[in-house]
Image 1 (cartoon, one colour):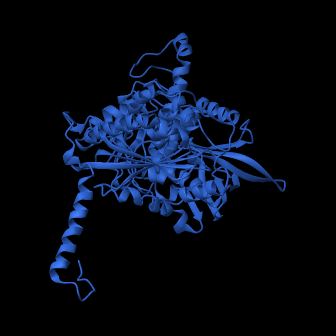
Image 2 (tube, helix red, strand yellow):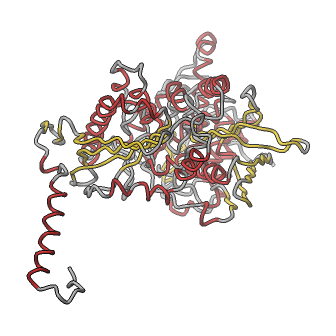
Length: 587
């Protein structure tokens, strides 16, 4: 402490002032519950944690439309750190209540991370050892004071779940999607808000909602959810909607789609229902973005609804009665945005979709949603295959994305499922066995070569079942028609996934599995554009083809052309093309 400016101040007085400052600071600090003071511990094989992790909960009403909740409690972080953590939960009034100037001001503030930093000053003043976590929920603030107990119960369960998950992740057991260096809680934002909203709802007295935490909130659990951090997910709010950065890596199913489309401001219940039913019927994942955009039709501005999932882009007509345009992310070639709210999407088919976002901020969120989806689906995608981004100003609108934990085998099953969705329109049903074997057997045995012998798929030619040598009867072929179509779709999806996910360093297909023309052409495409294969075992892939069949010859020729055209296969050390039918030179 510097010497006082007053010349009359004596050294003893200076010392007393210094000592009193220390005493006041220590007394204030001692009032805060520390991790070392938590005595109610529950013994666990992996982690010791308090039975009631939440130690303190304050509700501070800042206005009629904004309520802040500060939750302090025990939390386990990456590594061996343990101590108190905090949530700052902002509950923003409904759109109807917040139409005025104050409501718009609040929304603008919440769209800016810089402004959020100011609102976090209260949490930082608590002198917690870890940075605070942030949640945002839009509901009726008046019910918060009545449901304090339910809110505390919710956070008790959430803290406990996260402590277990992080402990398993630290011990190599998986189950955690931890963003290195992130100060933001890595849980599924949609699920957190949906379940917290259930706790806040006056009619939600039962405990069923809390049981869903294990499946819907904790990363890496039953639904295989992931998250990139609530900091980014919060910035994905669209006009107060529930669309966020967090999405499901494996489709999520009907429940996840219903949860994420449950409350979307700016859309009536009928629109939301039609949108939800469409996505469920398509087997889609949760939307990462839902919002209003405007297109030019004959000089007139028409309203459309843009929906982005981790797999596809949908443009619904007003009222969500019909899909005007939809395309898989694999088909998106370029994103052009010369102005903050103007976006033009160019697809490989030559189709161009241009629209205006509702606000410049929404335009940035749309770009971010597409970038995140590409990073999730196509890890390791080479630069010349990535979506070309022509965005101005680039620095402000293309921020650095945090690293993403893709899960077992580099997220290959995620890429595979998306490719099945891409192929399903042409081929048929999904074979879940592929994803299961990859996520379990391949991951546990550290297998880096994709071996078709690991799967029980049917022969695509329809002549024999997998692994058999006899000829099937006509009746058996008729009964297995659906399985053959489904297997073909799976093989197409596998080969497309191997192009865009570069985890596996080799491909093994032996003569127990024989391909038809279309599968061989896709195999050639895969070999041509995959630059990481070290081993290619293609033994007898067309062993039962008719040498006089021109179509079969074209299929095998596509494989040979793929090998010849890929100059990046310099690291290829093992190549086996034995037992394939030779078609000779046809001129």
